[in-house]
Length: 231
Image 1 (cartoon, rainbow, N blue to C red):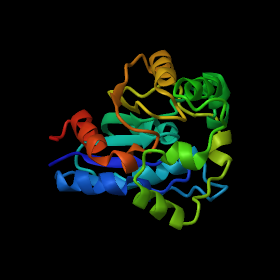
Image 2: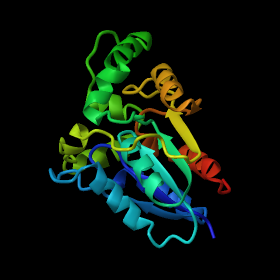
Image 3: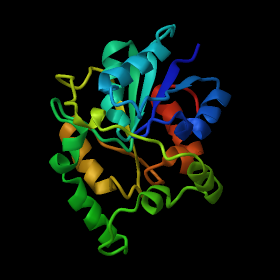
Image 4: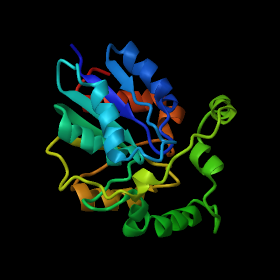
């Protein structure tokens, strides 16, 4: 039996983000659970997010593969610390440090300076971050339209204010898949942060920040390979 994959979204908490990858993993014979997080609930903190993901794999017969996208990297290791996990896979992640909140992460890592420098490097000049263009720049037009036809996913400040509660990274093999064209978390920035915080190199693939929408086939292949399933 294939390991169960649990897919944790980033800020906004929408399981829809994963829908193209879910269909590909399912077609490969994998048991997949894409998690819908209560992002609008001001009472829901990181522990509540982890509780929901853990319940989704409570009946798994084998150790699970936990995947976290962007801010989902704060929740994914909490899940891996609670349930038997064979692999932890982070996708364009915000990699936390013990005691650091997601709100503190940006300044602590130097994200803004790295993003501004990357904008200049790729010829966009001294622009400010545009959540539409810079998140969706490589997402197909039909999917972009579908995303914007839905209400904007809300995200409470609560999980951004809570210090990351783990004392250390869980003792679980970890892989970091990074998009080479991510404008929010540029490649060179991520190489530094992931090396400093996890001692790991990146598995780099084409794509921006929302690779589950823009590059689902390649991302699914990487997830299958990293999780030990056949691609």
